[in-house]
Image (cartoon, rainbow, N blue to C red; front, side, top):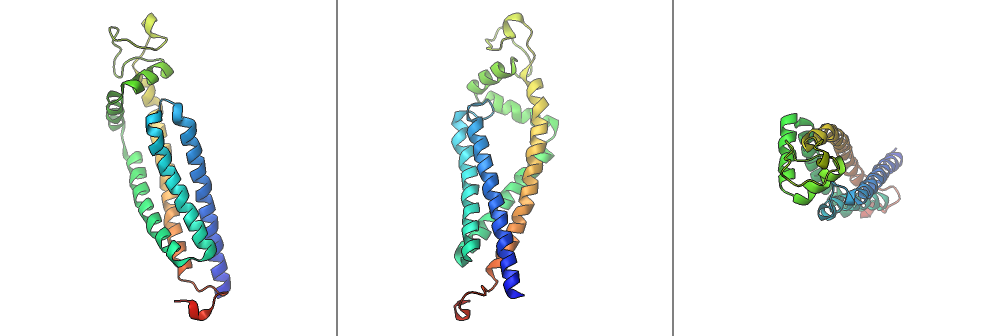
Length: 202
């Protein structure tokens, strides 16, 4: 029974970390793909990608710790994964709790902080200004010469709420799998390896 429980815990922890590795690689790929888009300009790419690489390294550490039953590596894996859970749960809850007015305020702050982002958004979404179109202000949108532009807030808001709900839901789901990962790592770490020397187990 002990050997079967040990093997089961090892397989479950390895499978969970393989899932984390695959998800983190997918997120890195998305960050690279979005590097040139208006939502993720090059100035932010290193930070976005850095966080995803960190998750990849945590998953790899957990996978190695599970395969080798490495006590120290599993201990640090548990601590780091629990901290990631706290951050991810908080951010996901905040994404789901943001209402329409708060979304507009956050979008406007981001809009006002970057002239280059404003130009990129205006060009890609074919809109001008944030809340109102100023015909005295230069705009690179195709609709501007014809005075047929609408404010960008309307178009951005169409996708912002859906994106926040999607990101919050996915983040919340994975935050609970991280709790399972911490529990599995703790349970597996304290099990005795049936193949090891009994006197070597602390």
